[in-house]
Image 1 (cartoon, one colour):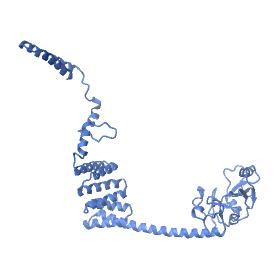
Image 2 (cartoon, one colour):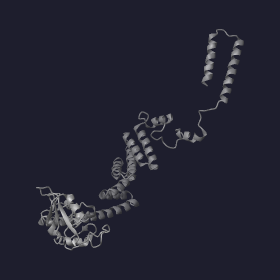
Image 3 (tube, one colour):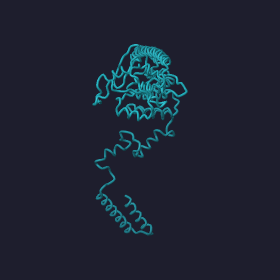
Image 4 (cartoon, one colour):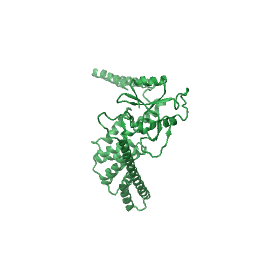
Length: 395
């Protein structure tokens, strides 16, 4: 319509330029204006209207309008000016009292709870609390609802704190007390849970959920205490076994290669724990009954066994990778390495494990007894010795 208004303005300028008008001139001007208006309207009807919504996008455009949208705009979306205005009316502290702001945020939180968007619900209820309302009923609801949101995302500690805060503002708030009892149960706060359930039953003796939770809590407490006693007894037995093992190691003067020279490092469970993956679950221990569990590693080996016994067990079945059958009893040499002194020791096969580890040059390595087995008088043995580049000592 702007062209028409410009046209009328131009005509008015012409009128202003003339001082006196006859009746004929006025009628002629009116007829001229009518004709030009009719021509302008007729031209509009022939033009295609391009400012509307296309048929394939009308639903999308409707959803953007604040009156018809089905979900709130997401971050980065273009926001309709009317929606911005509605937001300001709803959340502006100058347009709302503290109580109104708190209730507005509570409604938002309830909406998110309904759609299981619990983290957004936590945010909304938190904003309601920040509104600084002094209404205890409103604060109790906000804290209890935020407790529920925390509970559903398993933030039990925060949920319990909020439920207890709700009870501070409203001591007879049954929902908050029940939520607090549930959280206390999940956190193994048995005494707190028991007290809350008993308080619920004082008000409602037929509170079935409280009765069930009270029973579960008592059973869980008994089981937990029983497990704690069992663990304490096992820890005591483990400590006793370790002290016996430690005394035996010290009596045999066993040395460890990760003890510093000149400083005797105290024997600890960590020092005795094997660093090789297949042996992790089989640390050094005292055992009066010989038992062999063998694979590439020999485990649970008694100190009375000789190296020859070890080889017999190791080669009881041919090694799948040894096509030439070089690795067999009577055809190998066994070595151990003293890294501190830079020496390689050949092991006497008739000696027991206890005798071998008592030798001056032997050190426990990585929580295990480490030996090198190579075919004797072969290129493999020579390469092993050359690789070490250290003098060999015969035990």
